[in-house]
Length: 288
Image (tube, rainbow, N blue to C red; front, top):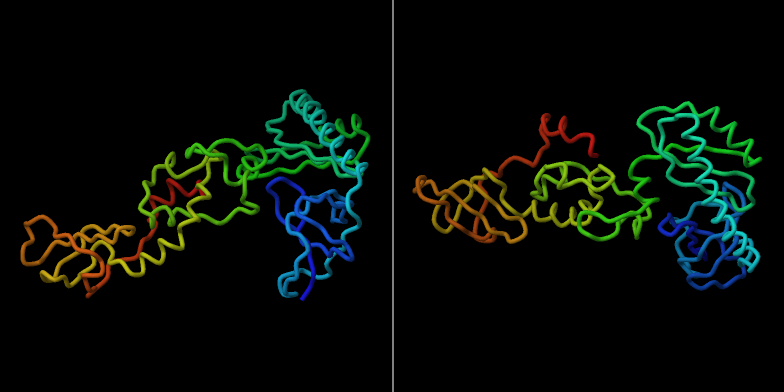
């Protein structure tokens, strides 16, 4: 077992484990830690806790110290510098006529490097831009191209549900989502219905997927041959959430389908699995 604290460097960023050494921290405490980018000021989101050593990546870096008022002031000053650097970089991008969109700026704590995050449809030759920025800021410059999901996470906004983006509120990492999930959940494969503001499949498709997979295992699929209290028939429609099954009985093929609950029918031959066909993949593949 090992004692750890969880530290986050962004409002909705990934949580990293550190060794608290001899310190006791509470949730929300600012701390100074050593990272791959140098010294950074982070916030404790998981106070001192003992976890299995299998859940940590060794060696666990120790916390340098609790953040002092001077450290917090410097972090706040860096945030102000980032806003100014954002405006300057946007002007430089326009001057160089580059087809790129600046999304965010980050100063390292010691101001030894500035990171500029941008999106673009393809590769961008920004060598002259880097030289120009370096001459203005007199420090190391790094430009990072990010995806549209990362852009949405950094900028935030409101989703089609009317609530703030999940990725900018509480999702530390993006979960894999697929068109098959939307199909298994019985959703319309209209891109405007299943994609978020970023233009990719909505992250919330993942939330209930496990429940849908469980229901799919116990619910006869469309086309399945089943035994019912009124005889054999084929499933014409199945509602996963309510468990209501509509069956066209063999003894009365011209009559409207009879309605049963999934617990009242027994599968003789199940229908095919939910699959994404080639046409659907060609039309919607860019959403994944």
